Each structure stands twice: as structure tokens, then as C-alpha cells.
Length: 171
Image (cartoon, rainbow, N blue to C red; front, side):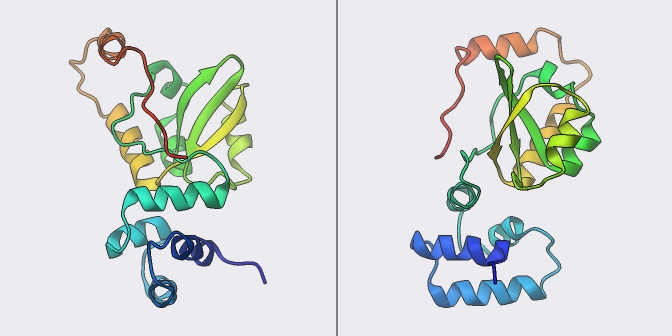
């Protein structure tokens, strides 16, 4: 029988020596009994592992680059390609476009509906990276809830301030 997502992530965390096998069993049971819908949020709430460890486990599980979304700079024109409610519902955020490939940070790269949903708005080839759902949704909300007094040049000024470089990602 294939492992559930929660089982696979806890097994990875055990392999990484971030939790003990007994803690893993207790976490799986507690998650089944909890009201939390998403296991990554449940783990963060338990306080046994930090976000960096969860990201590393997610990257290993999905076999894609794991990205800490907190504090990343996102391009205004890329976010405007998608409605806010779609980005939040799918827990995804466009990171960058490189030639004809759009890199999307998503909470579940295995979600088979994502490519079709993204394809309704853009025609790029899509490459997924994984991030923590809450961080992705917080970044989307922060972008769309920016002050109405923000100037149009703010994106260019921020890009210049960072030297146009992208922060390192976790692998």
C-alpha cells in the first residue's frame, strides 16, 4: 500500500534525523485527529520541526527545488497574469520566466489540475518548485493588498536595490 503524504513526509524527516521514529508515529496519529487540512501547517503548529526542515522534506518528496517564499521579490507583471483567488486556491505564485518557461512555486507539484488551470492564463511551459502553502498564500495576499499609494516604479527600485539577483533556494 502506498504511503500517504503525511507518512512519506514524516519518514523523510526521520531519515534526516529531524524527528524520532516514535515522534513520527505520534505526529501521524495526531494529524488524523486534528482539524488541520494541510500536513505542513500541522507540523509547523506542533513546533517539532522548523520551516527549513519542512521545505527540505517537501523538496525530497516532490523531487523539485524547495523555496522559502518569505521575503522573495515577485514580479508584478507575472502575478497580474493570474487572478488572486486562483493563486490562493491553488497555493501557487509565479516566480520567474526564463525564455518560454514559467517557474511556479506551488504547495503541491503533484496536483494534476495545476497545469490545466495555469494554462487557462498563460501559454508558457511550466516548471514547478515547492513551497509551504501558508508562505505562498501570504506572499500572494501581501502583493495584492499593497498600499494604493505605492508608485509604479517601486518594482524597478526594489530590483535595482537587490541588484536584480534572485535569492538562493534550498535544494
